[in-house]
Image (cartoon, rainbow, N blue to C red; front, side, top):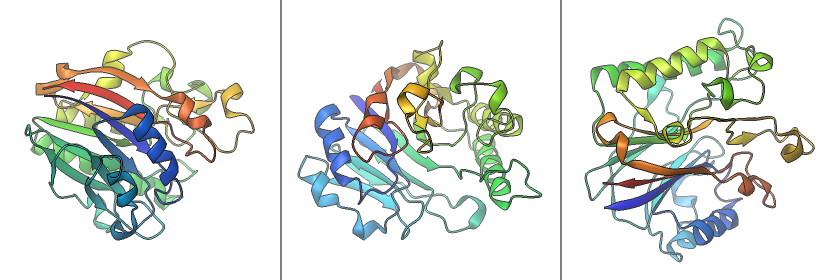
Length: 262
């Protein structure tokens, strides 16, 4: 079974339903994982996506905040969710494909602006969330699984536009990167994107604050596709669709894609 999977922080699935539809028409992934849907599940415009062949969905939602959804043109089963940090946030949902692969869709907290948990509860929440991920993966090593989402950490020096300038900026601080890599390694996860694109600057997010994001190109790779070690070599053809960031009224994230042969 071969399939293509995409992950995209959409920053309001209802507001940007036309962009999701355009993406599905233009790029036609078999599975699309969305984060920051900002919608209760029953308000997600599934009919718009079903009309394009994406009638299968599992999701967890909240009004105005967070929210994760997995859309698919392949049959999927709801595989539950994890309430990391026990805050009741809609930040994780899982779906199982007919080939037995479980897809985990995650939205890690952004962490606010101050990289100090004593001064910023949001940063503490982020670190706790990633630590709980590490503990789970250590205690229950994933098999036949794919984890994707806006993980809100750019781990490598070439995952940001300026490594030295961002060492004290949330998303690239050493404490976050260390926690991120500890979680990934605890589960034996393969970074599929960097397995396919091992060298060079690579970003999936550009701030709304930049008056000309494309020319300034001050990006970060915050969106990730991981595969468990047993299927890590099945992933290929990774790409970041940078041009989507330039669509009208876009999300500040671009979709990330990979294909799998399983």
